[in-house]
Image 1 (spheres, rainbow, N blue to C red):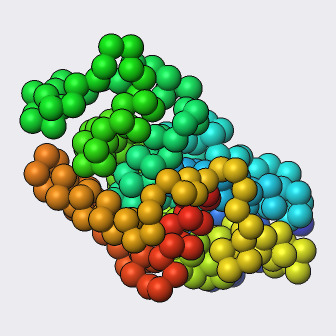
Image 2 (tube, rainbow, N blue to C red):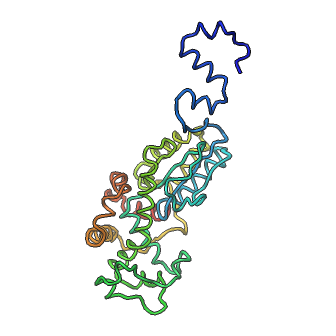
Length: 307
């Protein structure tokens, strides 16, 4: 193990020198563990390292997919996990390998609920589960709104959301898909809050500070910052973005977005004990909410599209 090193040289060395020599004789992964005195550290960062993008429903899956493609195709990284891999749409913060690093997209829960409501009420149904029969969860089926607007016979989820008033549709969304996603986001954030392998970012930052967000991702994944990669990322920049079909354009009148957010706040307080407002994701993403500036309509459209 120590061939070429004499006994006399070892015994005359200071202790730090001996430690470095021992570490140098081991494979790098184990040397890192030895030198740092840790039982579980990340493997050396190299082209073989796995780079992952984790999202939840309506938290930036489309954007993360585009960025993952840029990293794999332009950044020439061999091992990139796209959103959806290993339960990536429903990530609970576990399952990362020692040589894996992740960018984890979350979102303000109130914005998430609003976006899910608008997206799910579109016709024809945009997701398969929206063709299933509409049904209130047991804990709310006796509330006044559920009693006033019961699902019709054989009415599917999309049709129900499109038929009922916005406050009823938002409550249904918050009690089902919104609540499930909120709990997933918070669980993943608590599980990885001190894990250096995970960078958690807010989807809202993609509008309020796109360049800053891209820089965080480049730094965390240790990507070579080439002009080609930055151009690939830049195609998703909202200041130059062209909207396609994955959007909810026209589904809400100008200025109505703030009314929906106020309704969500009221429903959260009345039915969920401020669960949305006090969540981990809400506390992280509140400062990056882009709906307070004069570009609110464009930001709403962009964030609907990218999620």
